[in-house]
Image 1 (cartoon, rainbow, N blue to C red):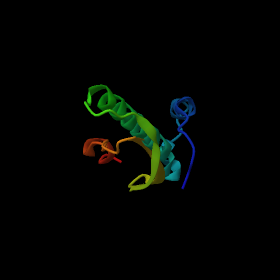
Image 2 (image 1 turned 180 degrees about the horizontal axis):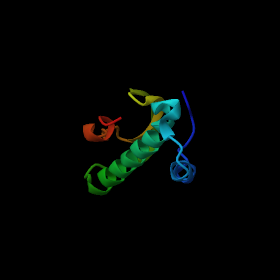
Image 3 (image 1 turned 180 degrees about the vertical axis):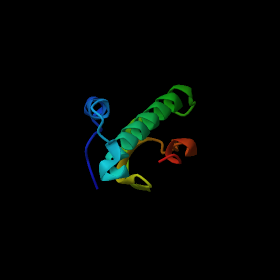
Image 4 (image 1 turned 120 degrees about the horizontal axis):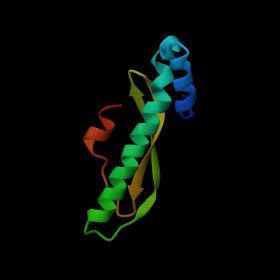
Length: 95
């Protein structure tokens, strides 16, 4: 499992110089998918906390292993103190 972030600027330079981002397979995009999914989950919990009538707040993260066509990675899923927050299926279904 890789634990690195996607370097957008480096990827852009590689594309502009004619290099193929997929030369090592889909795994080169795994960090990008991880970052985008975690950002979407963060936005979802922020929205949930601002609209719920339950008295709750953020309470860390749960780690989940995600297997996708682009590779396997560990996803940090936010949680709330009451345990009522469930990530929407459309956020994690795309990974």
